[in-house]
Image 1 (tube, rainbow, N blue to C red):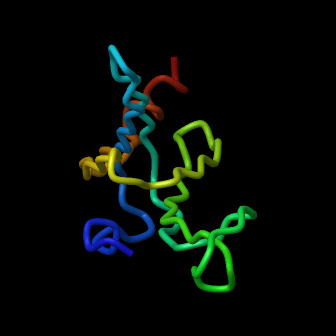
Image 2 (cartoon, one colour):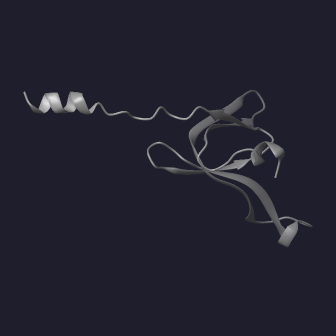
Length: 102
């Protein structure tokens, strides 16, 4: 696994930016979420002289804020940015109590 993916751990928020180079342009996609796991998994495609005769890919599994699970296949055109943790929700109990008495 490339060193850049080894630094990410479950629970961290990240933005994965992937690019697909075209002849005249570059297609870019972005996804943000919380890291579920980072791993190497083999594909169903055959690849000569690879471990178990399969092609192994670096993958990052993310969970988006809406709960959707996204699997990103990481390659040379992938950039991963660490995002700050979301602010924790605070409750104002005194405000809740005063609104109940009205």
